[in-house]
Image (cartoon, rainbow, N blue to C red):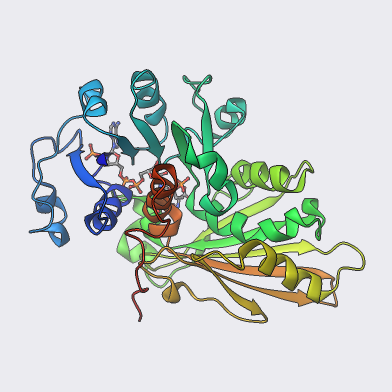
Length: 344
Ligand SMILES: NC(=O)C1=CN([C@@H]2O[C@H](COP(=O)(O)OP(=O)(O)OC[C@H]3O[C@@H](n4cnc5c(N)ncnc54)[C@H](OP(=O)(O)O)[C@@H]3O)[C@@H](O)[C@H]2O)C=CC1
Ligand SMILES: CC(=O)N[C@@H](CCC(=O)OP(=O)(O)O)C(=O)O
């Protein structure tokens, strides 16, 4: 398959190149940047030296890039992918957007939380969370890859929502991310003296991942869901830990919770169930497409607390995109993704 990466100079785009390098059935044909057009990607990312000595192109002639590619991966800030999607709507090329433009079934929800008009409202798109929407992904023209915090949170809560074991309107997601989640461009809170030896929450009660988690839990449970999501920034480069709380419905025993996780994920390669009472750790999934999940039951409060970890750039972005690509192409799902996590 010929693939192109738009926004190859971003962290998500560069991580895609790292992963695609080992993919036996993908050939990277175009990589783009608007601010570094004509430069070699390995001058901007020296870890790619000798592996990708490719020139960055502008995406101005997106029709030509689309005509030359079987798949276009988009690693651009939100708002740009929908323009690409429109420009390529009539071409056979398929699109995997790592951003948010195609994640919402109802584009008015996107507009309310992202504060920009959606300009490709009639696009047929699917939500790219592989373990939960695999069948939709197979034939999709446009895949809206799930977000990073949202992947960790939705995977943690899905078995309980699907089996109706929790009151979905009691969900609280408390999540922490490494700073690569904020992208490569310089921002004051990510400056070393501000970040190092520091720990803080941000966008409380207004983070744009809130409606994405609500959309999935509503879909999986069949019940309209409103929840709290609080993100935090931690001084590490990669990794997300989502701690998800919910009240158990009356009479739900711990064994029923165990069975729900086993039923949904027992055969999933990339989801590693650590079991009840265990403690997942971001370092155990670093550089890999795994999501490690454990759960605890607090009998005093009758709440279940699910802990989920991913690498935000892999299962939260580029790895999941390649997993979706594999599904869409009919390849074995772990093709090019079968990495042992980088420990320590
Ligand atoms: N980082 C993460 O952990 C995750 C990121 N994502 C999503 O992936 C996408 C990329 O994120 P990330 O790689 O972190 O971001 P970065 O800030 O690291 O990279 C952004 C990329 O977009 C390009 N770009 C920026 N502005 C424009 C513009 N106006 N027109 C065209 N290209 C532009 C940049 O290229 P240029 O060289 O021209 O500046 C660069 O390649 C976002 O939608 C993000 O939400 C999804 C999940 C996780
Ligand atoms: C640490 C950090 O800043 N994280 C980003 C989320 C990561 C991202 O790029 O968002 P998507 O997963 O939706 O694409 C944020 O909070 O906005």
